[in-house]
Length: 246
Image (tube, rainbow, N blue to C red; front, top):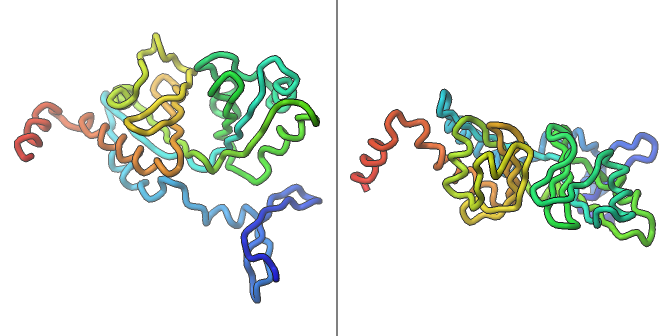
């Protein structure tokens, strides 16, 4: 009997990604990823209207949005080793070697340091495609210590921007986010409230958060709640009014 579970394969001639989906009479039909992409739903898609309505403009401005389906590849290798050299050959730039370091192009392919031999390669200029990890895995010769795993479906990317972005994060982040301690380009493993995530300061007023997909709803709602005071004309008066109502 034909297996009706979805599988992925690569067309040998074109290299394009395809997916096998159940068809008529149980016979699998082949659909390209380009055809399936519009059917994908990101972890925070249902909160798009909430994020849009929560945006604050002006001097105290802050906004949050989701950047869905970014390519994310988990890499393992000891810096300076043969495995690291093989992965760097595919990346085209060195792996990070220190806590908080990010290498590569923050607007394209870049790598976040997670631990002494663990990294996350992120490419925001591309959508996740089956086999994204293949070039990295293929570069690791048999017996060479290293690993490459597609983790694109593990975490989503939330982008917080605006003059008040840092102040919003400081309500629940356990790190010192002052520029002297957390300059542009730095990324660290931390928490937002109770949620563990990766935090990358990708610009003067831009921060990227990488929570696991199952925490996306919580993180968006937490951020929207934390943003509310920056849209109030008189935050202290509004706070007092809410306290009386309570």
